[in-house]
Image (cartoon, rainbow, N blue to C red; front, side, top):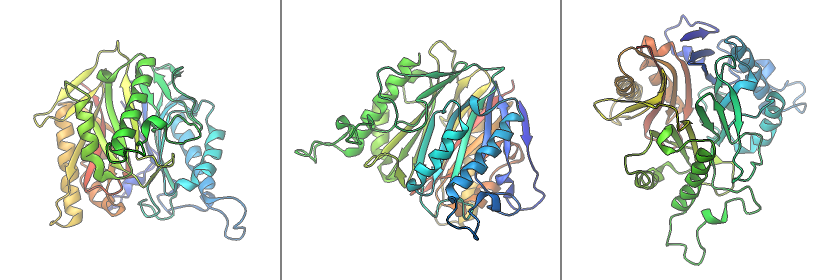
Length: 394
């Protein structure tokens, strides 16, 4: 395992969370969440439109360019490149920025990687002025062969991304929405019959269709749900999480794959209530499964394990201390699942409020602080949700 950081923090704050870091495990490259923020000044001048010439350019395009140039440098430092990016998640303050963002994105990627793009709202970013944040997984081409996986049974996406990419035995699916990219937006099979509007839940209809798309992609990539290592479910109304989870649990006789439900403000298809993001391994690849006493599992292949953990935030306690305690609890559960000798190489935390960033940082021990860290919003959530990637040394 290799740890790299472009800078170091000597303060007693949690500003280490904005450091640019990249870690490697089994040829997979994990990058800290990237915004256009600079640790010294916030949003730098080169990532913003000049106030003297306010109509020349767009802030979202300046910030996207700044982020992707930064990403390119980080990947090159560990023998990777933009062409070897295998998974991206993009968080926009406003989905109306997407088209301008995507124009820049297309210029940087020779092979458009799988992407999940969600809107989180104008007040959701922990860094004032940030319009977009990007989370990235890449591969070292000398270690893992990177190939596109297309499904002949699914329509081609409208936007600039690949439905699925393989990196060795790993499979990274783009976020899937309840659409066939036709003139109706939502797929007809994902909509409620207007003659019987109260006989099915719109979320259940959309979720069933979307999970069916994921099933098709997994099959065409040589995998199945038994080989899934983690799932992110983005809901426009996070209060619908229990309804989704009931459907999700009913799908699997032996229990569902590890998953997190994350709240968002908007999705890129009009009327969409759900987007599903999947990471899996090929069917022939031996799957590693480790379980903690509380039932938390860590799943992966070789020495790389993915774990998900959730912890509620106690409402009557001081908010900072309550978030800190929730993070500590989540990390403890995931760490017990990964086992002795496992070290975190990547943490992705989904926080209810940007103000929770300080409490989150306080909850990380020195080992976790060495990982690449991403914080993202979970709109409407009441607790902390975390994905932790471990390198099992033993």
